Image (cartoon, rainbow, N blue to C red; front, side, top):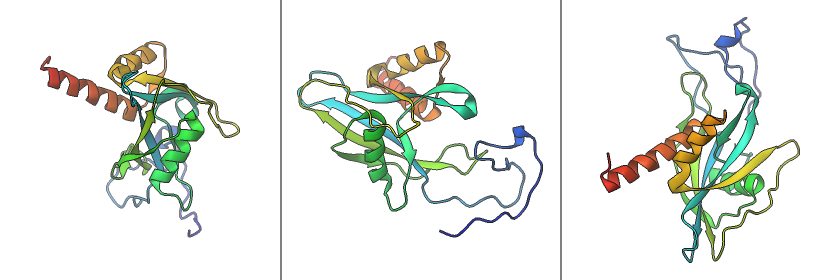
Length: 194
């Protein structure tokens, strides 16, 4: 990987910087290039092979300093050198939640998270986590300094759970809310209750 170098230094107000310190660029002209995939978010499909529990997923609660609040989000992580997004998703899911995926269901194209502020990007990797019997919460394998609370939520109840989190003062990650809202809307359309 080529070494980075400083090409200009400019004083700017904190309102003009994002989390990574990049200059907010809503002015015309060249922008930083979109980099290779940096990270993954993981949608784990927890499912019973015998119908003992409804389709569920895992969400995490984690303090995020840039917003100075606890955030509810999907498990996620940075891609290590030499790893594919799918390998990262399987590794990060096990580290953050203890769950072991049996395989990858699908991987999204490259997604940008906030293109008006940063060039941060990721892929959403959906993984299958089947259970022959009961759904049990495994032990997390957190890295030193990680403080993550994992929770299992039925997918059909996810939108209501996120509203409850918001009522309690948590911030809900946009990607998680978009998924929950899309699922809820699809159910309403399927049942023609709009």
